[in-house]
Image (cartoon, rainbow, N blue to C red; front, side):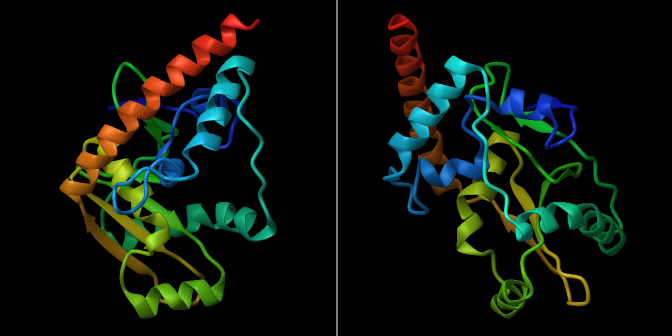
Length: 201
């Protein structure tokens, strides 16, 4: 794992992610069953375009998403206090020197990563009642483990005034093995598409 120490959301962070598959979008490459996703082609084209232009595609952020970003530091501080453990902030993590895939943990521990979500209140209540990892984040969490090399990862759902949901998610070796195969195929296709587009210039 290679860590990039830049603030998340900064121009440098976006530049480091441009044209690279990241764990928050691994659901666009593979389903939770380890099968190819129907969204893969659009994501492939997006990343190829980013490689050619050198610019990360703008992503829409609504009020709820911006609120979540603002509360992340508060949630991280609570996690450290509750778990009595120090959390390292990091901008981006590449899997290795090739820098073909990456993830942006909300924190790093000695042997695990941390993913924080600050959802709307009704969603937070739903997460608490379920008591399990929301399916929407399965590929992201498992993918982050594949990128970082960790065998477990903490998931935290935070909403002020409500109990926080903190889960220690274990690595699904069968899924990450399938994900690795799909990512390698996706990256090969991405490299070929970039080469083809540059040949059209």
